[in-house]
Amino acid sequence: MADTMEQPETDVVVYANGNSVPSDQEIMDSMLQVRFLHAKKQDRDYSHLFRKKSRLQLIRVSMVIVGIEFLYAAETAFVTPILLGIGLSHTFMTMIWAFSPVLGFFIAPMIASFSDTIRIQWGRRRPVLLALGLAMMAGMWILPHGKAIGVFFGDPDVPVDQMEGFRWSIPVTIVGLVLTDFDAETSNGIARAYFMDMCTPDDQARVLTTAMFIGGLGGTAGYVLGAIDWSQTNLDILGSNEATVFMFVFIVLGIGLLITLTSYREVPLPLIESDPLLRPINSNAFEAEKSRQLAVYSISKDVLLDPVKPDKEAAQSMDEDDDDKPLKLRDFLRNIVRMPKSLFILYSTQFFSQLGYLSYCLYFTDFVGAEVFGGDVSAPPGSPEAALYEEGVRYGCWGMAVFAVCSASYSAIIEQLVKRFSARPVYMGGLLLFSLGMLLMGLFKEKFMIFIACPTVGIMYATMYSLPYLLVSQYHSKNSFEMKDGKCIPNTTKRGFGADVSLMSSMLFLAQLIISLAIGSIIDAVETNVVVIFSASIFSLVAALTASQIVYMGL
Image 1: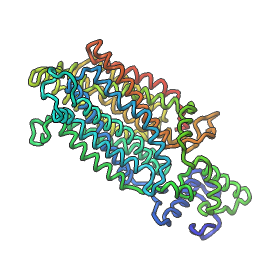
Image 2 (image 1 turned 60 degrees about the horizontal axis):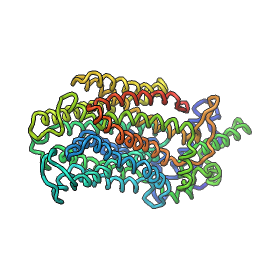
Image 3 (image 1 turned 180 degrees about the vertical axis):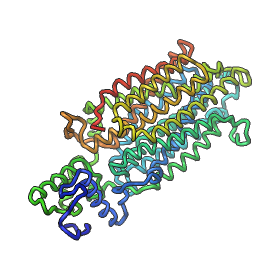
Image 4 (image 1 turned 90 degrees about the vertical axis):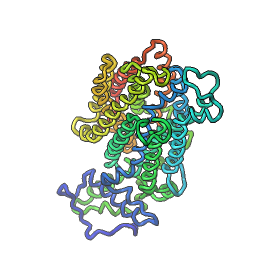
């Protein structure tokens, strides 16, 4: 036996089920215990990877999500007014939104695949997360100051309706938007891969719902900050509501990023490759250990080899397979082309969900300011129309704060709902509620309807950012993407977990690209942006239909 394992006092093992045949859960617990003891005795302690974590520890590891959701709130509330405020039409403004998704759709999965292969001592996910976080913070500092930077480079400081010709403020603002938006969504996928790497299989659902809960609180705070008229306070130190809110976001994101990056140590990839007992427990390793214990039991029903004493050579044989080796770029690209049908359906559902959500969130405050309050973003400063529009934007922020509160609240119970009703009705129900809420808000453009419809957005958002990622984790932990006669069919193609999680995030980029290129022209053609609310309802309905075809793996 390996000298790193503790010797038992007896060779006879009696399990909680009353006999010497272990249950699947007892086998999993024993395998985690083996790895926990082994990881604890390394030069650096990695035992946290193989133990259950408290709720506070789950909050700590996922704290960066608070900053990212805080940033999403500021983007949702202010980017459209910022772009319209530098003189762009809806058509060109929405085309600018397309810069980030074009970049993200092609590059974000490659960054995630790269994070599967990084070999430095600090780990694989954290170096990428740090680089993306710093770029994101640079972008959010540029974005609200684009007009001022443009004036510094020679733009005339005139009202929107008098702007013409080339203006520095436009490319500067685009750079700030791309840095902010691309890095935020790419960080979202990398962060989820990181904190799921840090958790045992039983904790992965808990960390996803925890991240959604604290992220909802962060989003709520962000929308409330956007709803405040900072020009009437002594805190308007940067000259505008947008700049003041983004300053708060900058601070919150920096703190959240620091807490996450210093939470738990990653095992360096070379050490993972050389030591099978520091690898996550995949389905192959579990089935091998289960077969080993049942084989021993079949020989003797009275004496069973202690499941927490496999030597390192046995662990090597049960764990070492091609799935543990990092994906190369050609493997990653081949996996995109040869995607399992179950993943394609899951990604399609996420794509239509994102189409619906983005139709709502990118233009919601503009919809409230223009359609509900009757304001005009291009009206001269100080005019009644401009004042109504600004009041509508702040009112819309309160509605989105309600959405964020509901998202946090629903994420706290979604895990229990899945256990009680299963994942399929919970997934489809969240999407259908959002579809109904958007339909009602588009039909009745009244202030009270905002606070009726926005809670449905929170339910859908919590669903969209928890269940799909949990399903990807299920596929990888079971090493299966297909079921037949109620049984999982083993996967024979090597796939990277980080890359598959990032591809899920890339559905946002693809959806944002389509929305950016199409919706603005439609708004200008029909001369009303209520169309975005109806399109959100339709896309979410389609997403619910595709969700009915997802392979849920018994979840």
